[in-house]
Image 1 (cartoon, rainbow, N blue to C red):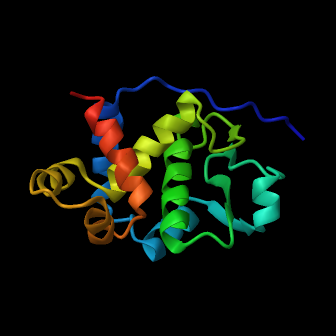
Image 2 (spheres, one colour):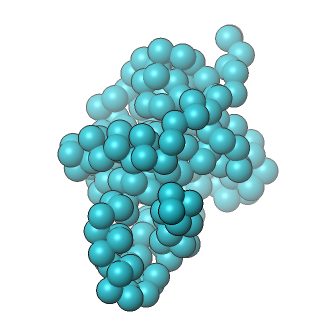
Length: 168
């Protein structure tokens, strides 16, 4: 079996990743049933693993073998909002870092690498679109209210604000 290399960041700016994610969003895949279906249609597989295996990093986060052949590993006990975020982050890795399967690779964790950052930006761009987020923030909407509006965890709103603030 071919040993897969760790995916490398492609060094796209926040704006470029956000623009790309917004083109993908037109397919309306950000809802959980839709994202699961999209992964399956693209030849991907989602495997839920135990919390112990997740914490011990017994599996990589994403394995890309070829076009239309990739597998995403997520923790079975995570809340639906976290699963959706992680699946979209993994989809970002598949599209951005493997060139939709043309470059077989793996992402071994959701750690703080540059490639991971790009996947996070991709997922947040789909889940919390910039323009609407900016409007809600300008109105003084709380992080919890924004999270409820977009059906995401409050931590994701904090991350989104952090990335958006880096643009200023």
